[in-house]
Image 1 (tube, rainbow, N blue to C red):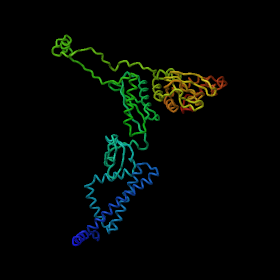
Image 2 (cartoon, helix red, strand yellow):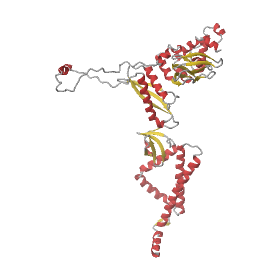
Image 3 (cartoon, one colour):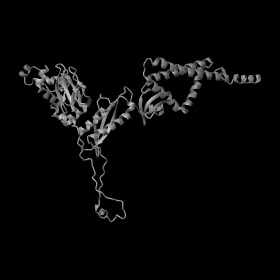
Length: 494
């Protein structure tokens, strides 16, 4: 045994290589390899401890934490490896030329790995893609789970983990849905028959969008008329969301809601049609005569020809139960002379809101930021100051416009008297955008509001002496008021 042990010791300690004047044996290489592996393990352990104990407490975002962790890990690996090699007697400066020559050869053979390595460094330091971002590259969509030096791990919507080489992110266009914020806009296409009422369609699409809880109310949903199709009118519903990683489920939910809303309103989605032109219809006359006379009944005994009524896209849509918004808006004095374009814009700026019985809609003396139209149900206008009801309003009536247009606090409290009361709401910010885009509508509102002089006097906004001095005093005051409140520029005072 001693002889065997002596021979093994001689084999492992025998000089097999001389590098830069330093002699190396198998035992030396084994100890160096063990120390380098240990340094790799310790470097990884230290970087993870720093991430969990320090970076997490500093509340740094997940992507930056991963980048700092990877940088610390590789820095420790390089430093520890350099110290181990120098301690073992390696003259690193003498190896520079050899390493350069070997590096050129390896570069040609492993250029893809080198490219992915450099790409990984670029991704880690640029921070354009971070762990936790929802991205789209080619046909892949998913969340970044890890960015390493060679590749990035992407978790798709189907919970499948895909390893993507880093070089691919630099060579291809990559959509980062989470970059510089977490809001994005999605487009829902819809095609309808060419005789569709555009205002009813707009209301249907916006109602579907506002009933989806994951759709943001600000920026508001929009409806765009894309083009005239061969058999249809093509539109798009545009909505904003703050959960880009679930945009496909939101898109599906919106499609369900749109299908329900357009079916309720009798809106038809047309099928493609084809026109067949018979250049010699006389040739079919004998065949049609034989079929109708029954001469071919022995050959095709199971064939029966029955007249059918084919419904086309020009069919009259079924009657809508509730009054549409266009008719209700026409009954309001401020909007009775609106054009179709102005009504379209007004409907696009508002939204439906549901209230339960006894639920307060607006409170007396609160700021006035909304104007309401009753679509269904009943509301009560109540004076808390005098402790008595003022009025009861039903379907088709409206309230809150005076306070909104004059900027005065609410003069009464309004609450719902019927279950599931539905109101159409126009907010101040949306009305401001509407008036800035349609100055003629602002002038119409100013004229109608100036006619309600007694209301303005009762609110203390005008006095009778001013009205007696000038018959245009009310209109001038209203114009100035709207200009100040909504930042618009109506006509000069008369």
